[in-house]
Image (cartoon, rainbow, N blue to C red; front, side):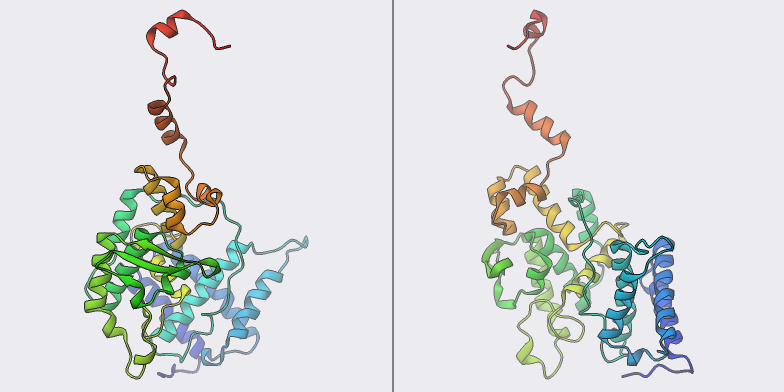
Length: 328
């Protein structure tokens, strides 16, 4: 491990992380400001407890910080931080610790397994097809991680799988020749989903020229996972979130994009192009079709367009209008 230097290792690593956010990730000013605000609050929490060395921070410290945010109240006794604000604060903390671990400045990321509070959500808004195209073109280069990230984005959109299903894929679960993937969903229910040509090409490029570079010596017996992290292990849900989030930031979708939004977009676009809802239900792995109907809410404009095209009396002919008759 590369030891942080100086009398204030916490301050030094926070400064390095800030530079990385600004220079390497190129965050927009508002996003960068939000990260800084959340990390200043986290820094104050740590220093108040005498924690000056990030190497001494464990999972329990991060969990305690979240608990303090959840318990904080204002002068009127109301909860000070909304669940969405706490979730955003955890994103900043994970970014900091993940950066330190990825750069070899710390041995491990203590925030990786800490769960965020549930944030009440409505039906997510699907991306437009143009936005999806921009997103899928947002990862440049032929480095191993770039090939992996493109394969992840293409697979999420092509198959509509959940993030847990994606990171759970093994190499043997994907049949590129047949264009299918075997997915283990909720309740250990297995299903086979089709994988489109664009996604197959991206996964093939990753397998041929990327995945082997991520495998670490001595981990050969643990490399059955399709998508690997920088340390050669199975990519986690949190790691996948970060990959999708970074791609979204590059095309102006920060705050709107998540793996679930790609799942919803895949289903919505299939319905827009005439797919039967039962087929979409099978693709998404829903037990009840009512769940699929929630995911695939039809816009009022499309509903009217389909209605007018399909219903025999949606448009009255000239003679009908002139008669002035009414329906009894």
